[in-house]
Length: 141
Image (cartoon, rainbow, N blue to C red):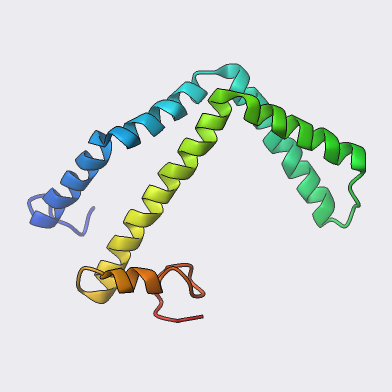
């Protein structure tokens, strides 16, 4: 159950925002890059392999095990090879851009609710730093 009535203006405006996001040509392009990646079994397998190897190395390092030069070189080579794949590189870039859009929209909405007004450029600039990484706690750390 939603706290917002489906007949309210807020619900309608939220729906309009969602329609604007879906209708945005740049967002559509990023979504296409994601879909291209999801449809490419080889790129997905390659990406998963590099990710899993990176996790293994991270866990070894976190456990205090010194990483060998050879395994570091092998991982770096696998990662470089992955980013030579246009589909994988496009996917990573698209994911980063979509996450940035999501973060920016959430930031605007969160600050609006917190401040009780539309945030100004100054409000948004204040949120760029601080301990909450733009979370709007009001601190200036």
